[in-house]
Image (cartoon, rainbow, N blue to C red; front, side, top):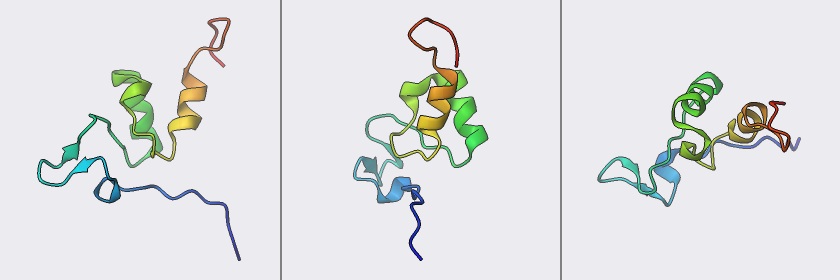
Length: 72
């Protein structure tokens, strides 16, 4: 049975991860949980999130203002 589930790409599997320095080379963070992702967006902003984060699009669309400046 095939599913359309998106997998979380761990930092160790990412090509942008520096294994020796144990950090992202472009300075992104990839929280494991939805709550942690939400807190990162509140503190650091959406630009700090890794593009491979499972909850990124969902939380950014809920937190970001629309074209009129109102939250969705």
